[in-house]
Amino acid sequence: MKFVKGIGLFFVYPLFMLVLGFYAGVRFTEHYEQLYYQQGEDTDTSGAEEKLQGQPVLESTEPLGNSTDYERAGNAAEEDSLYLEVVSASETLNVETKYVLEERDIYRDTVVETTWRLPDKYVGMNREQFLSAMKEYEAFPPLSEMQRGFVSLEVLSFSREKVVIQMNYRVVLPTDSFYLAVYDNKVVVLLDDRETVYIETDIKLEKLPEEEQEQIINMMFIEDEAGLYDFLEAHSS
Image: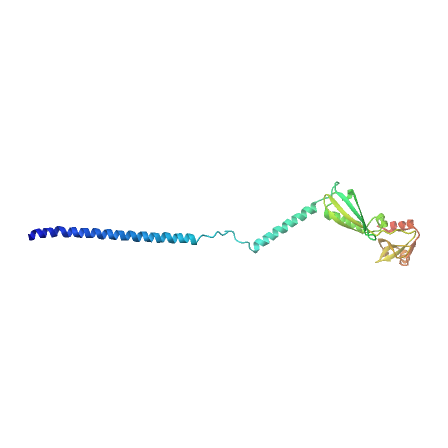
């Protein structure tokens, strides 16, 4: 009977240990898997939170303009301005250009505008050349303009299509006789009242003969228009 009990314990004990080991293994496996999945969920959650809270802000990879960039931009603007000036300066007059004259009476403050064909001597001129020609005309006007009371001129506009010039006159009705006087070392023509300036000339007193200089200083009498024109033509350059 004791032998039978011994055999039973021999088989039962190992079987019990085997079952106990299997149960321990299952519990350990379940615990490990639970821990693994929990760590995985924590990792995924933190990654999701990073994506939600840490969305990348798109920024330009190009550097903001510094002082050098502004200087370059300024230089470019200056070059464009110079280019426009060069284009304007290269614009020349042609036979189709309108020649508009605005004749202004200084005394009456009236203006008469007329449009003419561009004189041949101005064809092909650019702005600088035309302004130079106008300055020369103003300094040395024709005798016919002086007789009309020409005082000055101004170029109001210049383009290939049209030039506008304002001619200023001091229109005074001439008298039968005149007087020559000196003003600012230049000869001027006065009407017979000895006060009203009829013509301002560029004739310098020092260029005249001494006898004429004395007469003009004392107001030289000119009998008529023919005598006045003879004097002006003889001494005008």
